[in-house]
Length: 117
Image 1 (cartoon, rainbow, N blue to C red):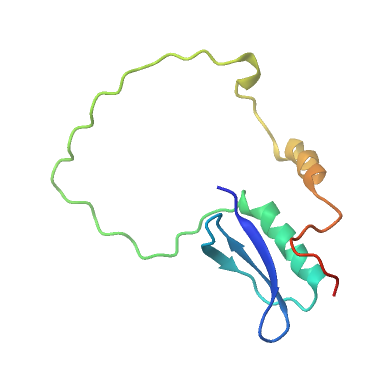
Image 2 (image 1 turned 180 degrees about the vertical axis):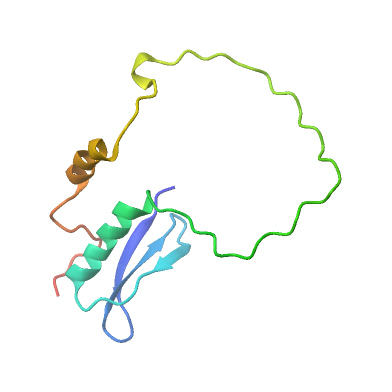
């Protein structure tokens, strides 16, 4: 599912962006930015960090599971699949990922809705 960033002016004439799902559900709204270029830089930062973001669970500890025995799981058939030569697992370090990340960066901001401010 592809999301969409929407850049807009809020009630105080400051720039914000929202992240929405393809069906229009609002997932997040940014803080306020004084100019459009700062808001676009904020979108780029979210795009770069969102896929690698860690999850910090700040919710209260869950209740303990019931003491009764769990239901047995159904048997799952084992299927052997040949792995293509190019798909085998290779160790990757952070240094090998950085050139790829830099190549994805675009120096020209992209946003929908034309109109210079």
